[in-house]
Length: 152
Image (tube, helix red, strand yellow):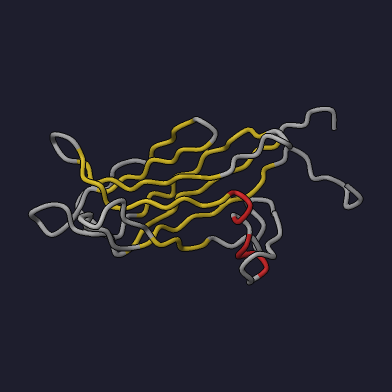
């Protein structure tokens, strides 16, 4: 292959057990993903603590210029502004950990590979005052236009 560009597909699939930010006891959650200086945003899911975004996007990457961290922040959309619902930073070197069932022995896989596991990540607070709970469900995988021969 002459082109060294890799495409990583990232799926921000869902969240569960989010904190209630509205008087209704629910939230209008959306997620903002920051990676390699770029920002991606899911749709807002109205009145839920368990949103299903099924949001996927591709990131072009070059070997030797891989990101250190993938930052995901969950917000509650309000008429005027937003409320913080939690965040998680995933070290890029750990995005495939769950594929081998261990903590640091994962295998990088194609996004559509049945053995490519999605995983739940616990949302964290920024300050002690934050009302944060829940987890976010994500999947990472590489995309290739052609299936490479096994030898590659």
